Image (cartoon, rainbow, N blue to C red; front, side, top):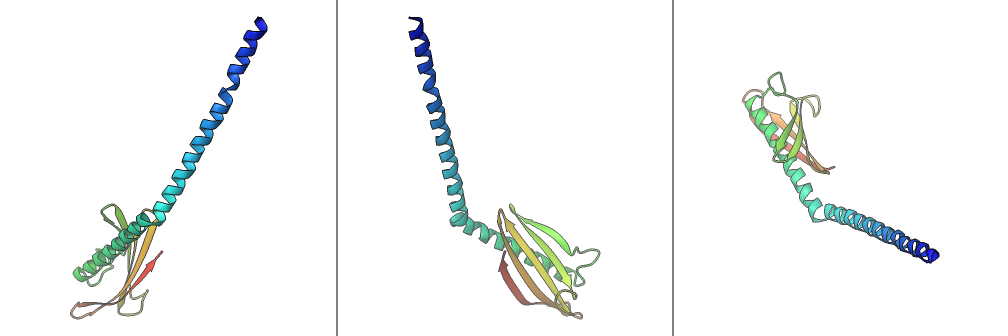
Length: 146
């Protein structure tokens, strides 16, 4: 009789190992499936939306730099920063204003890198500023997704 009780205890314990392994495998499968789902969402519609938001943030950075140059035709100088970060909603644009040295004499180059989560977009604008009248004209805008 004693041997039967010990045998039943050993048999009851054997069922827990396959159960734990089954639940562990199920959790790993769910983790892999959710990782793949996030990857495919990021590269499809959600990724396109983020890329467009990065482009709009970069465009906002170029527009903001143009306004700063219109207000101060000697920008960048002590009152106008050459490097700054512009926050547009939840997105950011890193803006760099380079006068004469980056794009040639008499021109100003504006580089704006917009970022949205993992997507980045860069716009490079070349502007001419008339030294007498202060009139600003945009010569070219180069669009490069990063």
